[in-house]
Length: 585
Ligand code: GLC
Ligand code: CA
Image (cartoon, rainbow, N blue to C red; front, top):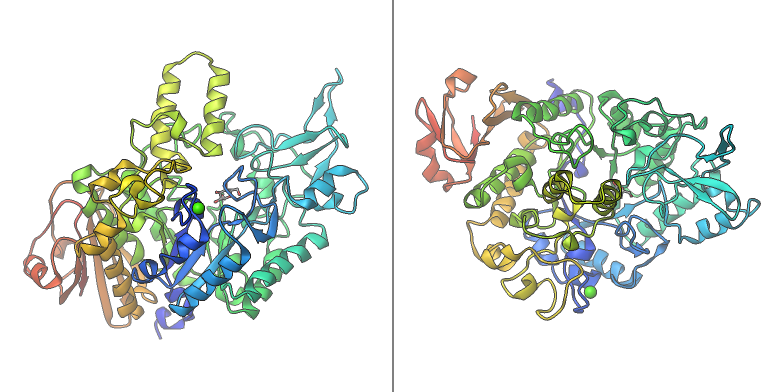
Protein backbone atom coordinates (compact mmCIF):
# COMPACT_ATOMS: atom_id res chain seq x y z
CA UNK A 1 0.00 0.00 0.00
CA UNK A 2 1.43 3.40 -0.90
CA UNK A 3 1.44 6.20 1.59
CA UNK A 4 -1.35 8.04 -0.25
CA UNK A 5 -3.87 5.37 0.61
CA UNK A 6 -2.87 5.39 4.28
CA UNK A 7 -3.61 9.04 4.92
CA UNK A 8 -7.05 9.67 6.28
CA UNK A 9 -9.79 10.94 4.06
CA UNK A 10 -12.05 13.68 5.40
CA UNK A 11 -14.70 16.02 4.02
CA UNK A 12 -12.80 19.03 5.26
CA UNK A 13 -9.72 18.03 3.28
CA UNK A 14 -11.83 18.05 0.13
CA UNK A 15 -13.30 21.49 0.87
CA UNK A 16 -12.24 24.91 -0.30
CA UNK A 17 -13.01 28.12 1.54
CA UNK A 18 -14.07 31.64 0.57
CA UNK A 19 -13.08 34.32 3.08
CA UNK A 20 -15.32 37.32 3.71
CA UNK A 21 -14.13 40.47 5.42
CA UNK A 22 -17.50 42.05 6.13
CA UNK A 23 -16.69 45.78 6.14
CA UNK A 24 -15.66 45.62 2.49
CA UNK A 25 -17.80 42.89 0.98
CA UNK A 26 -21.18 44.40 0.07
CA UNK A 27 -23.16 47.28 1.54
CA UNK A 28 -26.91 46.61 1.50
CA UNK A 29 -28.20 49.80 3.13
CA UNK A 30 -25.96 52.52 1.67
CA UNK A 31 -24.21 53.57 4.86
CA UNK A 32 -20.84 52.95 3.23
CA UNK A 33 -20.02 49.82 5.24
CA UNK A 34 -20.47 46.23 4.13
CA UNK A 35 -22.92 44.12 6.13
CA UNK A 36 -24.41 40.66 6.63
CA UNK A 37 -27.50 41.26 4.44
CA UNK A 38 -25.03 42.29 1.71
CA UNK A 39 -23.31 38.92 2.06
CA UNK A 40 -26.62 37.07 1.94
CA UNK A 41 -27.45 38.85 -1.32
CA UNK A 42 -24.32 37.40 -2.96
CA UNK A 43 -24.44 33.78 -1.83
CA UNK A 44 -25.13 32.48 -5.33
CA UNK A 45 -22.12 34.36 -6.64
CA UNK A 46 -20.00 32.62 -3.99
CA UNK A 47 -21.56 29.23 -4.56
CA UNK A 48 -20.97 29.46 -8.32
CA UNK A 49 -17.27 29.80 -7.70
CA UNK A 50 -17.36 26.20 -6.51
CA UNK A 51 -16.28 26.73 -2.91
CA UNK A 52 -17.70 24.66 -0.08
CA UNK A 53 -17.28 26.91 2.92
CA UNK A 54 -17.68 30.59 3.74
CA UNK A 55 -15.46 32.03 6.47
CA UNK A 56 -16.91 35.14 8.01
CA UNK A 57 -14.27 37.38 9.58
CA UNK A 58 -15.19 38.91 12.97
CA UNK A 59 -18.60 40.55 12.85
CA UNK A 60 -19.20 40.77 16.57
CA UNK A 61 -19.78 43.92 18.61
CA UNK A 62 -16.56 45.86 18.58
CA UNK A 63 -15.13 49.37 18.82
CA UNK A 64 -13.31 48.43 15.57
CA UNK A 65 -9.88 49.54 16.71
CA UNK A 66 -8.55 46.52 14.82
CA UNK A 67 -11.52 46.01 12.50
CA UNK A 68 -13.39 43.59 14.70
CA UNK A 69 -10.38 41.63 16.00
CA UNK A 70 -11.13 43.54 19.20
CA UNK A 71 -14.36 41.96 20.38
CA UNK A 72 -16.57 43.64 22.97
CA UNK A 73 -19.28 40.97 23.01
CA UNK A 74 -18.99 37.50 21.51
CA UNK A 75 -22.74 37.00 21.60
CA UNK A 76 -23.88 39.96 19.53
CA UNK A 77 -23.20 41.37 16.10
CA UNK A 78 -21.89 44.87 15.42
CA UNK A 79 -24.75 47.25 14.60
CA UNK A 80 -23.14 48.27 11.31
CA UNK A 81 -23.06 44.63 10.18
CA UNK A 82 -26.51 43.49 11.32
CA UNK A 83 -27.92 41.21 13.98
CA UNK A 84 -27.56 37.68 15.28
CA UNK A 85 -30.74 36.90 13.32
CA UNK A 86 -28.95 38.05 10.16
CA UNK A 87 -26.11 35.64 10.88
CA UNK A 88 -28.63 32.86 11.41
CA UNK A 89 -30.11 33.69 8.02
CA UNK A 90 -26.63 33.67 6.53
CA UNK A 91 -25.98 30.22 7.99
CA UNK A 92 -29.26 28.95 6.56
CA UNK A 93 -28.48 30.55 3.21
CA UNK A 94 -25.16 28.73 3.10
CA UNK A 95 -26.68 25.44 4.15
CA UNK A 96 -29.47 25.74 1.60
CA UNK A 97 -26.78 25.94 -1.09
CA UNK A 98 -24.79 23.03 0.28
CA UNK A 99 -22.14 25.30 1.80
CA UNK A 100 -20.93 25.60 5.37
CA UNK A 101 -20.14 28.66 7.46
CA UNK A 102 -17.11 29.32 9.68
CA UNK A 103 -16.99 31.97 12.34
CA UNK A 104 -13.80 33.72 13.41
CA UNK A 105 -12.81 32.88 16.98
CA UNK A 106 -10.66 35.65 18.44
CA UNK A 107 -9.83 34.52 21.95
CA UNK A 108 -6.20 35.37 22.59
CA UNK A 109 -7.50 38.82 23.50
CA UNK A 110 -10.69 40.83 23.73
CA UNK A 111 -11.46 44.52 23.31
CA UNK A 112 -10.74 46.72 26.32
CA UNK A 113 -14.46 47.55 25.99
CA UNK A 114 -15.49 43.98 26.78
CA UNK A 115 -17.40 43.77 30.06
CA UNK A 116 -14.86 41.24 31.35
CA UNK A 117 -12.05 43.74 30.96
CA UNK A 118 -14.04 46.64 32.36
CA UNK A 119 -14.62 44.55 35.46
CA UNK A 120 -11.06 43.29 35.52
CA UNK A 121 -9.48 46.73 35.50
CA UNK A 122 -11.93 48.14 38.05
CA UNK A 123 -10.19 46.72 41.13
CA UNK A 124 -7.61 44.17 42.17
CA UNK A 125 -10.17 42.03 43.92
CA UNK A 126 -12.84 42.07 41.26
CA UNK A 127 -13.83 38.51 40.31
CA UNK A 128 -12.67 39.18 36.73
CA UNK A 129 -9.22 40.45 37.73
CA UNK A 130 -7.58 37.14 36.82
CA UNK A 131 -9.25 36.97 33.44
CA UNK A 132 -6.45 39.13 32.04
CA UNK A 133 -2.71 39.29 32.62
CA UNK A 134 -1.83 41.92 35.24
CA UNK A 135 1.66 42.48 36.61
CA UNK A 136 3.26 45.02 38.91
CA UNK A 137 5.75 47.56 37.58
CA UNK A 138 9.49 47.24 37.87
CA UNK A 139 11.37 50.20 39.30
CA UNK A 140 15.00 51.09 38.64
CA UNK A 141 17.39 52.65 41.17
CA UNK A 142 16.22 56.14 40.30
CA UNK A 143 12.69 55.02 41.03
CA UNK A 144 11.53 55.16 37.41
CA UNK A 145 8.69 52.87 36.49
CA UNK A 146 9.19 50.17 33.83
CA UNK A 147 6.98 47.46 32.34
CA UNK A 148 7.35 43.94 33.80
CA UNK A 149 9.44 42.80 30.81
CA UNK A 150 10.69 43.87 27.40
CA UNK A 151 8.02 42.24 25.23
CA UNK A 152 6.93 44.37 22.31
CA UNK A 153 3.47 44.57 20.77
CA UNK A 154 2.90 43.55 17.16
CA UNK A 155 1.44 46.98 16.58
CA UNK A 156 4.46 48.96 17.92
CA UNK A 157 5.60 49.88 21.43
CA UNK A 158 5.68 47.92 24.69
CA UNK A 159 3.25 45.01 25.03
CA UNK A 160 2.39 46.30 28.51
CA UNK A 161 0.07 49.17 29.33
CA UNK A 162 0.10 50.92 32.69
CA UNK A 163 -3.33 51.21 34.25
CA UNK A 164 -3.43 54.07 36.71
CA UNK A 165 -6.53 52.99 38.59
CA UNK A 166 -5.10 49.81 40.11
CA UNK A 167 -1.43 50.62 39.58
CA UNK A 168 -0.49 47.60 37.47
CA UNK A 169 0.35 46.81 33.87
CA UNK A 170 -1.74 44.56 31.62
CA UNK A 171 -0.42 42.59 28.67
CA UNK A 172 -1.51 43.29 25.09
CA UNK A 173 0.39 41.54 22.32
CA UNK A 174 -1.54 43.65 19.79
CA UNK A 175 -3.09 47.11 20.24
CA UNK A 176 -3.37 48.74 23.66
CA UNK A 177 -7.12 48.25 23.29
CA UNK A 178 -6.68 44.47 22.87
CA UNK A 179 -5.80 43.06 26.32
CA UNK A 180 -4.68 39.42 26.34
CA UNK A 181 -6.88 36.91 28.13
CA UNK A 182 -5.36 34.78 30.87
CA UNK A 183 -5.91 31.20 29.71
CA UNK A 184 -4.36 29.83 32.91
CA UNK A 185 -7.55 30.85 34.67
CA UNK A 186 -10.13 28.04 34.19
CA UNK A 187 -13.21 30.33 33.89
CA UNK A 188 -11.61 31.91 30.80
CA UNK A 189 -11.34 28.55 29.12
CA UNK A 190 -14.89 27.69 30.07
CA UNK A 191 -16.09 31.01 28.63
CA UNK A 192 -14.38 30.23 25.32
CA UNK A 193 -15.98 26.79 25.19
CA UNK A 194 -19.37 28.38 25.81
CA UNK A 195 -18.87 30.85 22.96
CA UNK A 196 -17.97 28.02 20.60
CA UNK A 197 -21.03 26.02 21.53
CA UNK A 198 -23.28 29.05 21.18
CA UNK A 199 -22.34 29.55 17.52
CA UNK A 200 -22.14 25.84 16.72
CA UNK A 201 -25.61 25.39 18.15
CA UNK A 202 -26.76 28.11 15.78
CA UNK A 203 -25.50 25.96 12.93
CA UNK A 204 -22.03 27.39 12.33
CA UNK A 205 -19.73 24.65 11.02
CA UNK A 206 -16.45 25.56 12.62
CA UNK A 207 -13.91 28.27 13.26
CA UNK A 208 -10.91 30.10 12.01
CA UNK A 209 -8.93 30.78 15.18
CA UNK A 210 -7.03 34.01 15.50
CA UNK A 211 -3.36 33.80 16.65
CA UNK A 212 -4.30 30.61 18.44
CA UNK A 213 -0.72 29.61 19.22
CA UNK A 214 -0.33 32.66 21.49
CA UNK A 215 -2.88 31.57 24.10
CA UNK A 216 -0.44 29.84 26.45
CA UNK A 217 2.28 32.12 27.81
CA UNK A 218 5.34 31.09 29.74
CA UNK A 219 4.29 32.02 33.26
CA UNK A 220 7.66 33.36 34.30
CA UNK A 221 7.15 36.40 32.06
CA UNK A 222 10.89 36.74 31.60
CA UNK A 223 12.58 39.34 29.48
CA UNK A 224 12.91 38.11 25.94
CA UNK A 225 16.43 37.54 24.72
CA UNK A 226 17.46 40.54 22.64
CA UNK A 227 18.03 39.20 19.18
CA UNK A 228 18.31 41.82 16.46
CA UNK A 229 17.78 45.20 18.18
CA UNK A 230 16.02 46.42 15.05
CA UNK A 231 13.28 43.81 15.30
CA UNK A 232 12.05 43.96 18.90
CA UNK A 233 8.63 42.53 17.95
CA UNK A 234 10.38 39.27 17.18
CA UNK A 235 12.09 38.82 20.53
CA UNK A 236 9.27 37.54 22.64
CA UNK A 237 7.89 34.70 20.55
CA UNK A 238 9.87 32.19 22.57
CA UNK A 239 7.83 33.09 25.65
CA UNK A 240 4.37 33.36 24.19
CA UNK A 241 4.17 31.49 20.87
CA UNK A 242 3.51 27.73 21.22
CA UNK A 243 3.65 28.01 24.98
CA UNK A 244 3.79 25.17 27.51
CA UNK A 245 0.05 24.46 27.76
CA UNK A 246 -0.95 25.15 24.14
CA UNK A 247 -1.75 21.57 23.25
CA UNK A 248 -3.64 20.92 26.45
CA UNK A 249 -5.89 23.88 25.58
CA UNK A 250 -6.23 22.79 21.97
CA UNK A 251 -7.16 19.28 23.05
CA UNK A 252 -10.04 20.77 25.02
CA UNK A 253 -11.21 22.79 22.03
CA UNK A 254 -10.72 19.74 19.84
CA UNK A 255 -13.27 17.75 21.83
CA UNK A 256 -15.96 20.30 21.07
CA UNK A 257 -14.87 20.59 17.43
CA UNK A 258 -15.10 16.85 17.04
CA UNK A 259 -18.45 16.59 18.71
CA UNK A 260 -19.91 18.95 16.08
CA UNK A 261 -17.89 17.52 13.14
CA UNK A 262 -16.48 20.92 12.30
CA UNK A 263 -13.88 22.53 10.06
CA UNK A 264 -11.08 24.26 11.97
CA UNK A 265 -8.09 26.30 10.95
CA UNK A 266 -5.76 28.03 13.39
CA UNK A 267 -3.67 31.06 12.60
CA UNK A 268 -0.11 30.43 13.86
CA UNK A 269 2.48 33.14 13.40
CA UNK A 270 6.12 32.38 14.26
CA UNK A 271 6.13 28.70 13.49
CA UNK A 272 8.89 27.35 11.35
CA UNK A 273 9.18 24.01 13.09
CA UNK A 274 7.01 21.51 11.26
CA UNK A 275 7.06 19.09 14.20
CA UNK A 276 5.60 21.73 16.45
CA UNK A 277 2.76 22.29 13.99
CA UNK A 278 2.20 18.60 13.59
CA UNK A 279 1.18 18.35 17.23
CA UNK A 280 -1.72 20.64 16.39
CA UNK A 281 -2.79 19.15 13.06
CA UNK A 282 -1.95 15.47 12.98
CA UNK A 283 -5.15 13.63 12.23
CA UNK A 284 -5.27 11.40 15.27
CA UNK A 285 -4.47 14.12 17.78
CA UNK A 286 -7.87 15.75 17.31
CA UNK A 287 -6.78 19.33 17.88
CA UNK A 288 -7.14 21.40 14.70
CA UNK A 289 -7.60 20.36 11.07
CA UNK A 290 -4.95 22.72 9.71
CA UNK A 291 -3.11 25.95 10.39
CA UNK A 292 -2.08 29.06 8.49
CA UNK A 293 1.66 29.34 8.58
CA UNK A 294 3.49 32.49 7.54
CA UNK A 295 6.70 31.45 5.87
CA UNK A 296 5.63 32.22 2.32
CA UNK A 297 3.89 35.50 3.17
CA UNK A 298 6.83 36.78 5.21
CA UNK A 299 9.16 36.06 2.32
CA UNK A 300 9.45 39.64 1.05
CA UNK A 301 9.76 41.38 4.39
CA UNK A 302 12.77 43.60 4.91
CA UNK A 303 15.24 43.12 7.77
CA UNK A 304 13.71 45.71 10.05
CA UNK A 305 10.02 45.03 9.50
CA UNK A 306 7.57 44.24 6.74
CA UNK A 307 7.62 47.88 5.61
CA UNK A 308 11.30 47.73 4.74
CA UNK A 309 11.99 46.98 1.09
CA UNK A 310 12.44 43.28 0.48
CA UNK A 311 12.40 40.81 -2.38
CA UNK A 312 12.33 37.06 -2.79
CA UNK A 313 13.56 34.23 -4.98
CA UNK A 314 11.13 31.82 -6.59
CA UNK A 315 13.30 28.92 -5.44
CA UNK A 316 12.81 29.99 -1.80
CA UNK A 317 9.06 30.24 -2.27
CA UNK A 318 8.94 26.80 -3.84
CA UNK A 319 11.14 25.50 -1.04
CA UNK A 320 8.72 26.64 1.68
CA UNK A 321 5.79 24.98 -0.04
CA UNK A 322 7.70 21.80 -0.71
CA UNK A 323 8.77 21.44 2.90
CA UNK A 324 5.23 21.73 4.27
CA UNK A 325 3.71 19.67 1.47
CA UNK A 326 6.01 16.71 1.97
CA UNK A 327 6.00 16.87 5.72
CA UNK A 328 2.23 16.94 6.14
CA UNK A 329 1.76 14.24 3.55
CA UNK A 330 4.26 11.94 5.20
CA UNK A 331 2.85 12.51 8.68
CA UNK A 332 -0.91 12.52 8.16
CA UNK A 333 -1.19 16.25 8.82
CA UNK A 334 -2.87 18.77 6.56
CA UNK A 335 -2.11 22.18 5.01
CA UNK A 336 -4.13 25.35 4.52
CA UNK A 337 -3.26 26.96 1.17
CA UNK A 338 -3.45 30.73 0.78
CA UNK A 339 -1.88 33.68 -1.01
CA UNK A 340 -4.17 36.37 0.34
CA UNK A 341 -6.27 37.35 3.31
CA UNK A 342 -7.28 40.54 5.12
CA UNK A 343 -3.73 40.93 6.51
CA UNK A 344 -1.92 40.55 3.20
CA UNK A 345 -1.51 42.57 0.02
CA UNK A 346 -2.93 41.33 -3.26
CA UNK A 347 -1.08 38.36 -4.73
CA UNK A 348 -0.87 39.59 -8.33
CA UNK A 349 1.18 42.56 -7.21
CA UNK A 350 3.16 40.72 -4.64
CA UNK A 351 3.99 37.26 -5.92
CA UNK A 352 3.69 37.79 -9.66
CA UNK A 353 4.59 41.49 -9.63
CA UNK A 354 2.61 41.65 -12.85
CA UNK A 355 2.07 44.62 -15.12
CA UNK A 356 -1.52 45.52 -15.89
CA UNK A 357 -1.36 43.81 -19.31
CA UNK A 358 -0.58 40.53 -17.53
CA UNK A 359 -3.08 40.89 -14.73
CA UNK A 360 -5.46 38.27 -16.08
CA UNK A 361 -2.89 35.61 -16.89
CA UNK A 362 -0.96 36.21 -13.68
CA UNK A 363 -4.09 35.80 -11.57
CA UNK A 364 -4.87 32.51 -13.33
CA UNK A 365 -1.33 31.26 -12.86
CA UNK A 366 -1.43 31.99 -9.13
CA UNK A 367 -4.79 30.23 -8.78
CA UNK A 368 -3.49 27.10 -10.52
CA UNK A 369 -0.24 26.85 -8.58
CA UNK A 370 -1.90 27.36 -5.23
CA UNK A 371 -5.10 25.36 -5.35
CA UNK A 372 -3.79 22.15 -6.88
CA UNK A 373 -1.26 21.57 -4.12
CA UNK A 374 -2.03 19.30 -1.22
CA UNK A 375 -4.24 21.14 1.27
CA UNK A 376 -7.46 23.09 1.56
CA UNK A 377 -7.42 26.21 -0.66
CA UNK A 378 -8.60 29.57 0.65
CA UNK A 379 -9.84 32.30 -1.70
CA UNK A 380 -10.01 35.78 -0.22
CA UNK A 381 -12.77 38.12 -1.41
CA UNK A 382 -11.74 39.88 -4.62
CA UNK A 383 -8.95 37.41 -5.32
CA UNK A 384 -11.38 35.57 -7.61
CA UNK A 385 -11.67 38.82 -9.57
CA UNK A 386 -7.96 39.47 -9.75
CA UNK A 387 -8.23 42.59 -7.59
CA UNK A 388 -5.02 44.56 -7.12
CA UNK A 389 -3.25 46.63 -4.47
CA UNK A 390 -4.35 50.22 -3.87
CA UNK A 391 -3.24 52.65 -6.58
CA UNK A 392 0.29 54.06 -6.06
CA UNK A 393 -1.04 57.61 -6.21
CA UNK A 394 -3.26 57.20 -3.14
CA UNK A 395 -2.23 59.45 -0.23
CA UNK A 396 -2.03 58.55 3.46
CA UNK A 397 -5.60 59.72 4.02
CA UNK A 398 -6.80 56.60 2.16
CA UNK A 399 -5.02 54.22 4.54
CA UNK A 400 -7.09 53.04 7.50
CA UNK A 401 -5.30 50.10 9.09
CA UNK A 402 -4.01 50.50 12.65
CA UNK A 403 -0.86 48.54 11.86
CA UNK A 404 0.06 50.85 8.99
CA UNK A 405 -1.04 54.05 10.74
CA UNK A 406 0.88 53.21 13.91
CA UNK A 407 3.96 52.68 11.80
CA UNK A 408 3.39 55.99 10.02
CA UNK A 409 2.77 57.95 13.20
CA UNK A 410 5.88 56.51 14.69
CA UNK A 411 7.86 57.63 11.67
CA UNK A 412 6.42 61.11 11.96
CA UNK A 413 7.35 61.20 15.62
CA UNK A 414 10.87 59.94 15.15
CA UNK A 415 11.64 62.21 12.21
CA UNK A 416 9.33 65.15 12.17
CA UNK A 417 10.32 66.58 8.83
CA UNK A 418 9.75 64.72 5.58
CA UNK A 419 12.75 62.57 4.76
CA UNK A 420 13.60 59.95 2.25
CA UNK A 421 12.64 57.37 4.86
CA UNK A 422 9.11 58.73 4.76
CA UNK A 423 8.96 58.41 1.02
CA UNK A 424 10.25 54.84 1.18
CA UNK A 425 7.74 53.95 3.88
CA UNK A 426 4.90 55.30 1.78
CA UNK A 427 6.00 53.25 -1.19
CA UNK A 428 6.15 50.19 1.02
CA UNK A 429 2.63 50.77 2.36
CA UNK A 430 1.39 50.49 -1.21
CA UNK A 431 3.15 47.14 -1.40
CA UNK A 432 2.60 45.60 2.01
CA UNK A 433 0.01 47.42 4.10
CA UNK A 434 -3.04 45.41 5.06
CA UNK A 435 -5.09 48.17 3.43
CA UNK A 436 -4.24 46.65 0.06
CA UNK A 437 -6.46 43.69 0.77
CA UNK A 438 -9.19 45.75 2.37
CA UNK A 439 -10.57 47.96 -0.39
CA UNK A 440 -14.21 47.19 -1.12
CA UNK A 441 -15.13 44.35 -3.45
CA UNK A 442 -15.80 45.59 -6.96
CA UNK A 443 -19.24 44.43 -8.07
CA UNK A 444 -20.12 46.52 -11.13
CA UNK A 445 -18.79 49.35 -13.30
CA UNK A 446 -21.08 51.88 -11.60
CA UNK A 447 -19.66 54.56 -9.27
CA UNK A 448 -18.10 53.01 -6.14
CA UNK A 449 -17.89 49.77 -8.07
CA UNK A 450 -21.43 48.94 -6.95
CA UNK A 451 -20.13 48.22 -3.44
CA UNK A 452 -22.40 50.92 -2.04
CA UNK A 453 -24.72 53.57 -3.47
CA UNK A 454 -23.23 55.85 -6.15
CA UNK A 455 -23.46 58.96 -3.96
CA UNK A 456 -22.24 57.38 -0.75
CA UNK A 457 -18.72 57.86 0.57
CA UNK A 458 -17.63 54.31 1.41
CA UNK A 459 -15.64 53.79 4.63
CA UNK A 460 -12.66 53.02 2.43
CA UNK A 461 -12.30 54.14 -1.18
CA UNK A 462 -12.90 51.66 -3.95
CA UNK A 463 -9.95 50.93 -6.23
CA UNK A 464 -10.82 52.89 -9.40
CA UNK A 465 -9.85 49.98 -11.64
CA UNK A 466 -13.39 48.61 -11.17
CA UNK A 467 -14.17 50.80 -14.17
CA UNK A 468 -11.66 48.86 -16.26
CA UNK A 469 -13.50 45.56 -16.14
CA UNK A 470 -12.24 44.34 -12.77
CA UNK A 471 -15.67 43.78 -11.30
CA UNK A 472 -17.94 40.84 -10.61
CA UNK A 473 -20.63 41.74 -13.13
CA UNK A 474 -18.17 41.91 -16.02
CA UNK A 475 -16.31 38.79 -14.94
CA UNK A 476 -19.35 36.63 -14.40
CA UNK A 477 -20.38 37.47 -17.99
CA UNK A 478 -16.93 36.80 -19.43
CA UNK A 479 -16.09 33.08 -19.71
CA UNK A 480 -12.41 34.01 -19.96
CA UNK A 481 -12.30 35.88 -16.64
CA UNK A 482 -10.33 35.16 -13.48
CA UNK A 483 -13.63 34.32 -11.77
CA UNK A 484 -14.47 31.51 -14.19
CA UNK A 485 -10.92 30.30 -14.18
CA UNK A 486 -10.95 29.95 -10.39
CA UNK A 487 -14.18 27.97 -10.74
CA UNK A 488 -12.45 25.71 -13.29
CA UNK A 489 -9.48 25.10 -10.98
CA UNK A 490 -11.69 24.29 -8.00
CA UNK A 491 -13.83 22.09 -10.25
CA UNK A 492 -10.78 20.19 -11.47
CA UNK A 493 -9.62 19.63 -7.91
CA UNK A 494 -12.99 18.05 -7.14
CA UNK A 495 -13.17 16.01 -10.32
CA UNK A 496 -9.73 14.46 -9.77
CA UNK A 497 -10.04 14.23 -6.01
CA UNK A 498 -7.65 11.31 -5.61
CA UNK A 499 -4.88 13.13 -7.39
CA UNK A 500 -5.30 16.69 -6.20
CA UNK A 501 -6.58 16.13 -2.69
CA UNK A 502 -5.03 12.82 -1.71
CA UNK A 503 -2.04 12.51 -4.02
CA UNK A 504 1.64 12.86 -3.18
CA UNK A 505 3.53 16.03 -4.14
CA UNK A 506 6.83 16.25 -5.94
CA UNK A 507 8.51 19.47 -6.96
CA UNK A 508 9.76 19.44 -10.57
CA UNK A 509 12.50 21.67 -12.04
CA UNK A 510 13.47 22.65 -8.52
CA UNK A 511 16.28 25.08 -9.34
CA UNK A 512 14.40 27.17 -11.87
CA UNK A 513 13.77 30.81 -10.98
CA UNK A 514 11.19 30.96 -13.77
CA UNK A 515 9.05 27.88 -13.52
CA UNK A 516 6.89 26.58 -10.67
CA UNK A 517 6.10 22.96 -11.46
CA UNK A 518 5.04 19.94 -9.46
CA UNK A 519 3.45 16.57 -9.90
CA UNK A 520 0.64 15.05 -7.88
CA UNK A 521 0.50 11.27 -7.82
CA UNK A 522 -2.11 8.90 -6.53
CA UNK A 523 -1.37 5.21 -7.14
CA UNK A 524 -1.09 4.98 -10.92
CA UNK A 525 -2.59 8.39 -11.67
CA UNK A 526 -0.32 11.37 -12.11
CA UNK A 527 -0.77 15.02 -13.04
CA UNK A 528 1.73 17.79 -13.76
CA UNK A 529 1.05 21.40 -12.82
CA UNK A 530 3.38 23.60 -14.83
CA UNK A 531 3.53 27.38 -14.56
CA UNK A 532 5.63 30.10 -16.12
CA UNK A 533 6.25 32.59 -13.30
CA UNK A 534 7.67 35.25 -15.67
CA UNK A 535 6.37 37.84 -18.10
CA UNK A 536 8.28 36.32 -21.02
CA UNK A 537 7.49 33.25 -23.05
CA UNK A 538 9.85 30.37 -22.34
CA UNK A 539 10.66 26.94 -23.60
CA UNK A 540 10.49 23.93 -21.33
CA UNK A 541 11.95 20.56 -22.09
CA UNK A 542 9.82 17.87 -20.44
CA UNK A 543 12.32 15.03 -20.94
CA UNK A 544 15.02 16.88 -19.01
CA UNK A 545 12.69 16.93 -16.03
CA UNK A 546 11.67 13.32 -16.27
CA UNK A 547 8.33 13.94 -17.99
CA UNK A 548 7.87 11.73 -21.02
CA UNK A 549 4.79 13.27 -22.58
CA UNK A 550 1.28 14.19 -21.57
CA UNK A 551 -1.83 12.11 -22.11
CA UNK A 552 -4.30 14.92 -21.75
CA UNK A 553 -4.54 18.65 -21.08
CA UNK A 554 -6.86 19.08 -18.12
CA UNK A 555 -6.70 22.87 -17.96
CA UNK A 556 -4.76 25.64 -19.61
CA UNK A 557 -4.87 29.34 -18.79
CA UNK A 558 -4.53 30.50 -22.40
CA UNK A 559 -6.50 27.99 -24.44
CA UNK A 560 -9.32 25.55 -24.19
CA UNK A 561 -7.88 22.17 -23.20
CA UNK A 562 -8.41 20.69 -26.69
CA UNK A 563 -6.76 23.59 -28.45
CA UNK A 564 -3.77 23.45 -26.13
CA UNK A 565 -3.17 19.75 -26.69
CA UNK A 566 -0.97 20.28 -29.74
CA UNK A 567 1.37 22.60 -27.83
CA UNK A 568 2.14 19.99 -25.19
CA UNK A 569 2.79 17.05 -27.46
CA UNK A 570 6.20 17.78 -28.99
CA UNK A 571 9.67 17.45 -27.49
CA UNK A 572 9.85 21.10 -26.40
CA UNK A 573 6.96 22.97 -24.85
CA UNK A 574 6.50 26.72 -25.12
CA UNK A 575 4.88 28.50 -22.22
CA UNK A 576 3.36 31.93 -22.81
CA UNK A 577 3.90 34.75 -20.24
CA UNK A 578 2.52 33.57 -16.88
CA UNK A 579 0.92 30.56 -18.54
CA UNK A 580 -0.24 27.70 -16.34
CA UNK A 581 -1.18 24.27 -17.62
CA UNK A 582 -2.37 21.11 -15.90
CA UNK A 583 -1.55 17.87 -17.66
CA UNK A 584 -2.49 14.28 -17.03
CA UNK A 585 0.68 12.23 -17.45
C1 GLC B 1 -4.65 38.20 13.41
C2 GLC B 1 -5.65 38.84 12.49
C3 GLC B 1 -5.31 40.29 12.35
C4 GLC B 1 -5.38 40.92 13.72
C5 GLC B 1 -4.52 40.18 14.75
C6 GLC B 1 -4.89 40.56 16.13
O1 GLC B 1 -3.37 38.23 12.89
O2 GLC B 1 -5.69 38.17 11.27
O3 GLC B 1 -6.16 40.94 11.45
O4 GLC B 1 -4.96 42.25 13.65
O5 GLC B 1 -4.69 38.79 14.67
O6 GLC B 1 -6.16 40.05 16.45
CA1 CA C 1 -24.14 48.78 5.37
